[in-house]
Image (tube, rainbow, N blue to C red; front, side, top):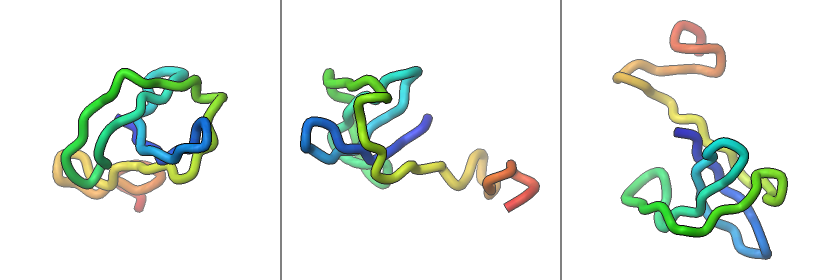
Length: 69
C-alpha cells in the first residue's frame, strides 16, 4: 500500500496510489482511515509528501530493502 499527501483542485488530502490513480481517504495513515469514492489521475495531482511504510512484518525496511537502511 502506497500512501501520499497530495493537492488536487486546491484541496490537500491523504490518498492511496492505486495504479495510475490516487484515491482520496478520510483520515490518515497514522490512525483510522476509510477510502472515499473520489479519485484523481496521478498526473493531475501535486505530490506534497510521499510516505513509505517503515516496517513490514516487524522488520525495519530502508530505502534499499530490509537489509540496507
